[in-house]
Image (cartoon, rainbow, N blue to C red; front, side, top):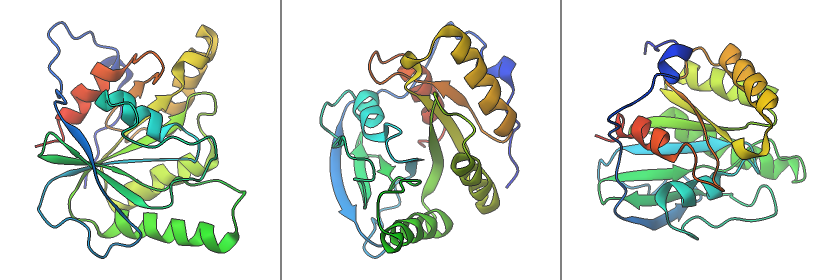
Length: 212
């Protein structure tokens, strides 16, 4: 699959009449410990993946405007299953296990990694992968490896820089330059704050392109 190169001028272009996905309903659907039994109804799946403690649950709750939809935890590596959320009754948001958390056993990390890998490689319903990257630590090896893996699998992906509100202005500029330098094939890069909701409309606008 060919990829559109990321163009900074496109990302910063103002949108005077934005149209974006309007989430009217969002419900937890089911959790899965293997690929067996995954939904077979043909709904497209927008997948969220990232390092442990990158803020996936907080982002999903913010994005869907549903506090407590995805369970947050102060313990990284809590998500060990594939979690499905039904959005507007016509699309799934899929929360994959986090990667890169060292404080679990090697065997458990391998199990999570195999589940994540098998899903990304084999799942036909994937419409888009949203890779969450901690804005305070852009360009980490594990995130670069995930981008390479998604490219290898031919999966379209976009990047969300989480915890954007925690950066000073100079740090924000540096973070953008760093992630843009290693994410040439990203369909988009969005700065996001789950605390304030900044970036929500822009991300929904991007997701809407892959929700049909």
